[in-house]
Structure formats: structure tokens, C-alpha cells
Image 1 (tube, rainbow, N blue to C red):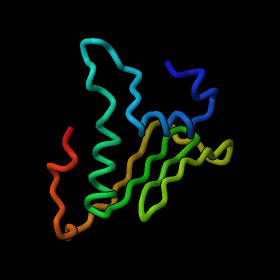
Image 2 (cartoon, rainbow, N blue to C red):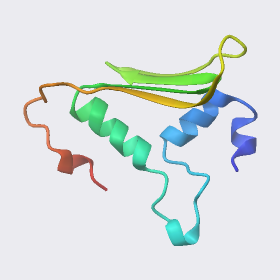
Image 3 (cartoon, one colour):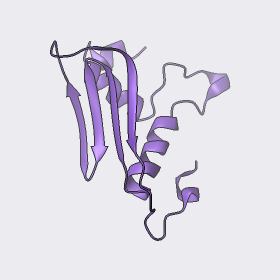
Image 4 (cartoon, one colour):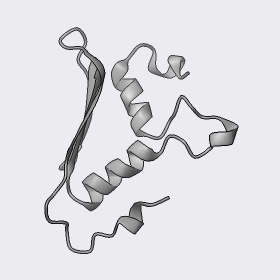
Length: 102
């Protein structure tokens, strides 16, 4: 699924996954695909934390105004997916998790 959109570019595949696209979109499961994007928004925008995802030969970094999708080519390859999160000990004043529920 989405082979034409990504055209073999793993950074583009990460971008689609982080924007709510799911390979499991089915009529009986219409709400699939938003877990990463909503959790990431709550962590970075609401909590002022950081998010890093490494999968295959690409990574995504989202924090402090940076929103990068980088294809590593043949430099490095990870078999699987790793997600790192920087979760603040103290939350910003006014933070409310309800604002990030769909």
C-alpha cells in the first residue's frame, strides 16, 4: 500500500506514517492510523518534549521547531523501528491532555 507515493523512499514512508496514513485502513477500522500523529503532537506541542523515530534506512526528528525526515541511504540500516521520546518532568502551565484527544 502507498508504494507509488513513497517510491522506495523510506523517509517518505515515515512521513506518511507520522501523518496518519495506515496500511491497515479498512472500512471496519476507520479510525486507525492517528496514534502516532496525535501522541506526537501532545508530546512535542503540548508537553514541549521531543520525538525521534528510526526505521529501516530513515529517521524522523520532531522537537524545538524541527520537523525533519531524513533518508540515510546506505549509511545505516535498522531492522525494525525504534521510537525515542523526551518526556519533560515538569509540564508547561496550561497543558491539558484533553486538547489532544480525537
